[in-house]
Amino acid sequence: MVITYNGGSYFKLQSGEKSILIDPDNQRSFKGSLLVLSTVKPSPTNPEENGPFFIDSQGEYDISEIRIESRTAAHEDDGEKTVYRIDFDDIVIGVLGPIKKDPDAKALEILQDCDILIVPSGGEPYLGASAVGKIVRQTEPGIVIPSLAKNPKDLLKELGQENAKPEEKLTLKKKDISPKAMTVKWLIA
Image (cartoon, rainbow, N blue to C red; front, side, top):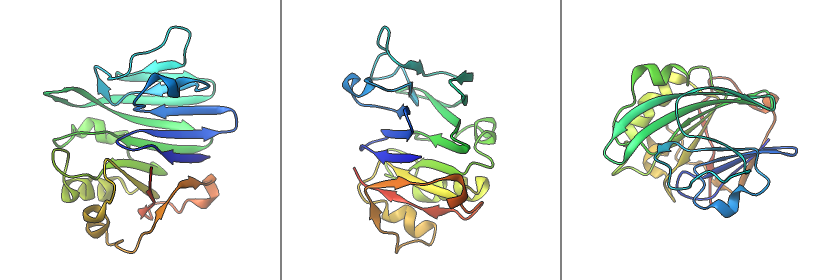
């Protein structure tokens, strides 16, 4: 699997011919993608007719051997925020998007035992480093990927990984992930 970061909360997960976009910022990105997930409802990008399968609300989905579970994390002024658990290429990825207040406890349940957890790390107006650190320690993923920050120094400090270096992309297989290690992989756009 290859994970690339495109800024904000926009990520691309790719394995072979299959790709998933998380919070893309424009519809030009949709080309060739199997799925588009939006952590914010209403989504700033709308689904295309005859485009990829578009998910922006809670439920359970099975699309081309990819299993997705989603729950509402919070209702905020700018819309409903959704948390995702994606089972893709034998790797379980949790996605906690741009939320401003602590997510609902039931929403956090689906983030348990994730191999990878994508979390907001930009601070104001989103969750601060200590709140995100608490979620990371509760869920104990193998890898933590910060979003919403050019330099996630506060989260790195909170998790005791100030020496993490930025990377352009993350290429890995299930065997490369140490369970519960909470290793931060800082991806740059």
